[in-house]
Amino acid sequence: MLCFTILSRYRLTLKWKIQKKLLIPSDTLFTTKEYQNIILEIVIMSLAPIPGIQDLYIPETYPDWKDPDTGKLGAHAKLYVNAILLSCAMILRMVLLIRFLITFTRFRSARQQRLCLYSNDQEADFMFAIKAIKEDSPYTFVAFALVVPLLALAYCVRIFEQPLIPVSNQNFDSFGNCVWFLIVTMATVGFGDYWPTSYLGRIVGMLSCFWGVFTLSTMVVILNNLLEFTEGERKSFDLLMKMKCKDELKACTVNVIISAQKHKFERSRDDIDYTKLSTAYTMFRKSIFELKRAAKRVQAMRGNENDIDTFTRDLGDIHKEIDKVRDHQKILLKELGAQYMQLPQIPKKRRGSSTNRSGSPNNSGVHKRNGSQPG
Image: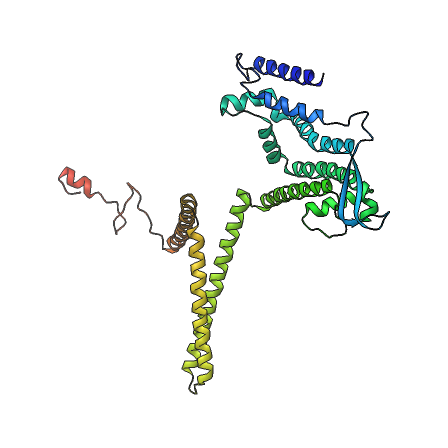
């Protein structure tokens, strides 16, 4: 019945993908390699406690531990078969739980699968959905990857270690102690206050070590990406560093001028104190050295710029020079206007009413045209 249900579901899923044009009509469960998932799911679902064998157990002997009944080395414990099946089912069925939850995300919808298949020739499978969730919601991904396996593995440790509690004298019957043991193990700390005694408990501890390394490495990557600059933040930081380097260059230039003046003053004194002169010269050399270092830093900051940044900076400098020229031109025009207003005004002659020095009208033009002298 279980096999028939799983096979029917995969066949219906195949028909649905063909109807949504995600697959071609000639595709089958073998051409799409879905038969591998069918076998895996059947094996996982087959692992479950079997009724009627609840009293069946596997005897275990631990030669390094004392038996609490006899007090001799060689402790014995009973590991029930149903407990093993239940623990394996809990660990392996987490795969089915993850696949079930990913199916309802937007990265596994029919529209997203068509877009990925037609645009990039990439199938939006479960692995693609896991990567997309990690990129889209990294904190949710890390929390789920940490909490769910932690609880499942803690329950497995509790089942495997319960028969050996009288031998190991460790209270693994408490679920909180099992969670604490796995947190310390997954964090690769290992305080040593709790440790597994049974063989299967040690296997679970090994699995938790490997899973803890994966989870911690993922958290490190996410935190590193969180602390990285965005493009705008990187530009702002570079601008602040350039301003800082320029301010340091100005301060070094001022120190060079001051130290040079002090050295010149010590040399120009009548009673030269060679100790002060040597100190002033040393300070001057030190200021020159710091000025060169600051100039190199400014040059290095400019060297990190690309062509677009250099062009933008040069264009801004040109605009500033143009504004300075315009301001200077306005000042000159104002000064010329003020000087022109201070010049003496020259009276203008009126047309047709010009007079000679005697006060009589000037009719020379009329006499020349008539060719006669006035009477």
